[in-house]
Length: 180
Figure 1 (cartoon, rainbow, N blue to C red):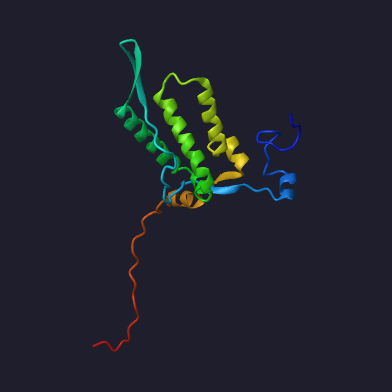
Figure 2 (tube, rainbow, N blue to C red; figure 1 turned 135 degrees about the vertical axis):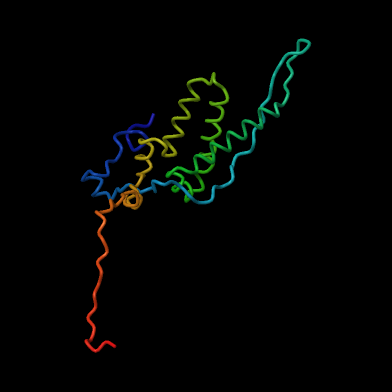
């Protein structure tokens, strides 16, 4: 069994405010707080078909469940679309190799939602996907990401309170005494 060395989850995560991280040049990449606004890629996994099994005359019969399959695919597509609105999707958009992993996360989430009796190992695997994709605080730190504060939005939301109303001042102008 290998010992030592850097592996995911071994040792403390780098602290961007530490002197050692500063020496190594470690900085968190800022992700926009408003999320990803670009084009959402197509779902990269092959569609799956759900089946219903029952017994008829002592033998097992397996039939495609078209309604369940369609419902599952719709939910999978919703989760995919929701995932691509997150700030993390800005980083994923530049790393197309992550797209199948994001799709697997979406599919697993749909499976767990579809089956209320999903076992604990599936739920644990979902959490591992969230870490890998940076959807948890630990996962964001592991990926070297941080959500940047939207300072422009903060300024935009500040309302300037109007001061007391001031009556307009009438302006007089000097005229030459030779007015006809």
